[in-house]
Every structure is written in C-alpha cells, then in structure tokens.
Image (cartoon, rainbow, N blue to C red; front, side, top):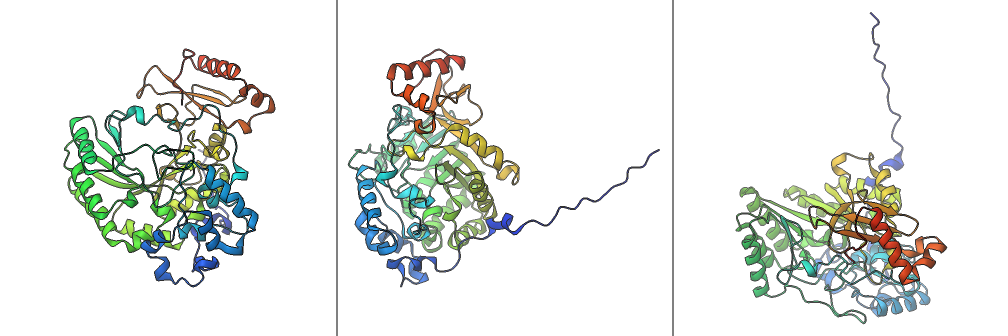
Length: 459
C-alpha cells in the first residue's frame, strides 16, 4: 500500500502593507488645523466642545482652516451649501480628519461638505423619500415595513449631517431646497409609538434611529429603552448612531449617556433580550486612536457594535479601500454588517455608483477576512421593497443602468427598480434617458424580462 507523505507548506511572511488596518491615526492630529492649533487633548476629547465648535457655514469653515486651501475653494463651498438638500454640520473631529492638501478628493470632505463644482443633475427618477418610509408609517415617527421589525424615529437631529442622508426629507433644519417633514419629537408622539408597538404582537425587533441616538439625552435613552423592554414580544433593540464615526470622544466623555446605554444593554441581557449599537463608518480615515479607545470601552462593557456602510463614489468604491475598512472595523471589534447601495437621494448624484460596482467590490472583499466579519452588500429597493442582496436582482440591464428586484416576503407581487447614475452609462444610453417615453419603455422592458408586468413601484 502506498503511504501518503505529509509535506509542510508554510505561507511566506505577510507583507507589512497587509497589516495596515492596525495602523490608525495617532497623536494630536487636530493641531494641523489653524483654529485647533492650541487645543489640548482634554478639550478636543470633550464632546460638548465638539458640538459647540461644529462647522455650520462656509464662513465658519474659512475661519477654521484659513489658508490651508485656496479662496476659490470657499466660493465652491458657499455655492454648494446653498444648493444642498441637507443642512451642513461637521464636527471638529471630522474637520481634523480631512486631508486639506487635497480637499476635492478627500473622502471625508466628500461626505459632509458640498462643493457646487462636483454636483451632477439628479437622475430623473429620484424622489425625496425614495424608500417610501412615509407610506409605511402607521403613526408619526414609526415605519413598519417588515413583518417583525419596525423603525422608531424619536428625533430629527444628528451630531453631523451626511450629504447623502436617505431621510433628507425630514432630518435637520429646513434648507433652501427642502422643507422637512416632522418626526416623533414630543412625549405624546413617543407614547403613541410605544402603544403601536405593544399592539402588534408580531413585532420583535425595533430600530431606534432618527436623527441619531447620539443626540438623545441619557434620560431619553432610559425612557425609550425601558418602554421597549417592557413590551413582552419585543426581543431585539438597536440604537442607531453615526456618532462613533464622527464624534467618538462622546463615548469617552459623556458618562451619563454611556451609562444609560450600558444599563439598557445589561437589563436586556437579564431579560434575554438583545440590545446593540448600529453605527456607520464609510472610510478607514474616519478611524483614529480616539475611535479605538471608544470602541474598546464599549467592548469592555459587553456592548455589541455593528457597522452599516453606504457605498459612495470617491469614498469607498475602491475594492482595496473597502477591504481596509472591513479589516480595520473587525480589528476594533466592530462587526461589518451591511454595505448599502447609495439610496436614490436628491442633490448628491455624483456620490452614487452602479450596481455592478457593488458586485465587483463584494467579490474582492469576500475571503479577505472571516465570513462573519464580511458585510452583506445590499440594495434597499426603492419604493419600499426593503433590503435585497445585491446579487439577487431578477434582471439587470447594465447598458441602461436598470436593476429590477422583487421582495416576496415584504411586498409580494411587486417589482422595485434601482437606477445606476446616468453619467456612468455610455453616451448612447445617456441620450435615451433624455427622452421620457424612451426611458419609460426601457424600464418596462427590464421589468418584463424580470418576469413581471410592466408596472412597478416607482421610487
């Protein structure tokens, strides 16, 4: 009998660049910004100081960064602020994380500071509420789309405002282009939401968002958490906040807020109910030693943190950038959970990518770390179809940029359509979109090839 000889096959040493995810920004990096040059660590880590010194106008930005950029940049910003559907609010932490030697291409500037010169015309099928959250709202501040899950929106403010916010119809102050829809901001509206949740025994999962849970006072965290834990059929609760990505020092210096979250997590565990934090990092440059310290503190308290990114052109639509983000989050015990297609949001067309970009990046990222730390790449189907795996389209017309999804467990018998940004298409396809009748025929044909009638749920 022939014996099998075991041979050892050692992998070569890992090149240093493959461990870049462990190298987060160190030191007092904020001192490179003229206005923060004399700010000591204790002051910069104070979440109240961060909020009070957040940038809300081009004039404040100019005062902060001064001669780091050319005067023409501020003219671009001023016009961009005027045309933005979202109010602008940028924390000092983010300002200090921007590479001001190349602000036009910086991924953090891209997300938070609008430039008029970069804007593109909206896709003709875009709407303010592309996900139709208001159509699935039984009471103010509640969206109930999925069978066992509901979204609770108890406030409409955030520590910063993302240009690409899917709730630009409601979040932040009114702008020159958008009057905001009110959410559930009063105690009476909160009570109505809790009564609705209690009346629906199928609900097991509540997402507390807004707005941003970072902006809830500690007593409000306790009020909401206690009310939801007291409803017997609710088993899972998620506090959604972009805070760790844009103002991580709050976790370190707002002890009442952290203690309130920790108390709800601990009480939930004793009741065999899961309470977690969902956050939103989009680029590895958002992560510093301050983030690391904050995430370590949450981990020490036994708080699970999951991340939901948005795929954004010029921010994370490069496979290696996304891979680095996933690895860096994993290293900090933040679970990379979702990467969403950019929603069909008005005023930020230059940030969207084609569906194919998401498919290609998912293929590259998968296998670069453990499966449970590999995010799902998702399209939240316009028109209220809910979250669909990026690959699960029923038909994808790449030439004209039309992806058709169905959602049999959410809204059976209907089709939902996502549109690639027109500027990424061929000149011939771009020309076809300029004619409404031709565009409607293209959409109808794509839905027909997906196996459905030519009618669909518009965004």
